[in-house]
Image 1 (cartoon, one colour):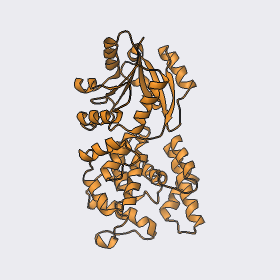
Image 2 (cartoon, rainbow, N blue to C red):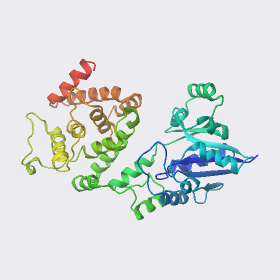
Image 3 (tube, one colour):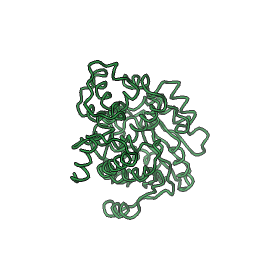
Image 4 (tube, one colour):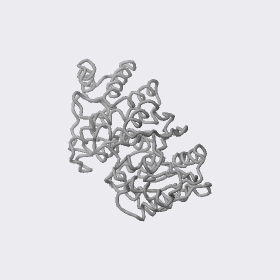
Length: 376
C-alpha cells in the first residue's frame, strides 16, 4: 500500500524547520510521497497572509531537489477558508488505496478537538505530531484524550526542531533586520526581491530613530510578546504596536519636544519610556490608552498594570538577545504563564537595581509592593 504524507500550513513564509520536518517524516514513516500544501486562507486567522502565488513559489524554491516531495496548489486553487477535513477527504478520493499521514505540530494537538469535524479528519488519515524546540510530543495526557474522544491515537514523530517561525521572518523583514540564519537563502532572496512583509508607517519611523542593534531588539520583543497572544486573548495588532514602539524614544532628546513634561523623580534609564509614550501619542497619533500606557511603563512597571503592559515589560526583559544571569530561568517562567513570569521579572529588576546601588523609581517600588508584597 502506498504511504503518502500531507504537510499543510500557511507557509507565510516557509522556513528551514518546515523542510527539516518533512525530511524527517519521509524517513521515519517510510513515505512514498510527501504532499506539501499551502492554504489559501487558514480558518483560524482573519488577517490575510502574503499572496498565495508568492507563498507557493517560495515553497517550491525551499523543497527543490528533495526526493519524494510534491508541492500541491489544491487549496490555493480551491480558494476560501481551508478546512483540513475537506482536503483530507479529497485526497482520500484521489488516493483511495493509499495510507495517508497528516503532519501537525505538537502544539496543535490540544486544539485539535476545536477543528472542523476532527472525526472526519481521523477517518481519512493518521495524525502525525512533531515537537518544536526540543520539547518533543506530550505522551500520556494527549494520547489518553485521543483514545477516549476519538478511539484513535496519533503517531509521534521523533523529531523536535528549533524554535524557528514564519513570524520571526516576517517581523525581521518588516524592520530590515538581517534574515541570515533564520531564512532559507532562496526564500530570503525571494522575500527581498518581491518586497514581501514590508513594514508600514510605524516601522519606517523606528528605522529612522533607532540603531541597528536596537531595531533587532525591538523585533525580538515583538516576537516574544506575540507568543502570548493566544494565552492572554489580546489583540495581536495591539501587542505588535506596543512592542514595536516601546523603545521609540530611546535616542530622542526631550528638549526637542517643548510640550513634553517629565514627571519629577524619573531616573535617566526610565526617561525614554515616558518620552516614548508622548511620541506615540502626539507624533505617531496613537489613540489607544492601553498601548500608550504599555510604552510608558515598560521599563519601570507600576501598580495595577494592564495585561498588555505586563506583557511588554516581560518581553523587553527576556527576548532572545538578552544575556544576563537568570534570564534563562525567566524564560522558563514565561512558559509557565505571563503573570508568574511578570512577578519573577519584577523581582529580578528590583534586586538588580539594589545590587548595583542604583536609585529605584517610585513606580517600580509601587509595583513591587502591589504585586510581590501585596500578592496581586
